[in-house]
Length: 95
Image 1 (tube, one colour):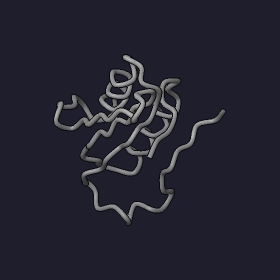
Image 2 (tube, rainbow, N blue to C red):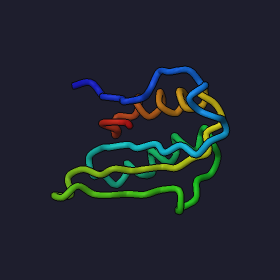
Image 3 (cartoon, one colour):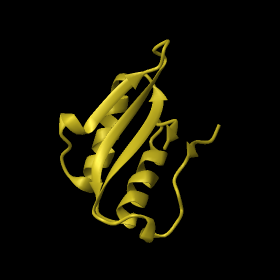
């Protein structure tokens, strides 16, 4: 099964960089998911702080969503983060 990524392919003009940008990642509730997602995002923006990360479990606890709020500096940066998150075997979906 392939991964689904819902990311707009519109031009930069819909964003005024730098801007606050939430990255939402979904995956199975595994201990390494948060660490993996944070490592990927930190590789592009630098160290994250706990207040930038929100985690919610599904009603039965099988899945988890992780929202990481960043200050995005360019469309190229967002595309690179998206690409690397899609490549992670722990990530099921991106918004």
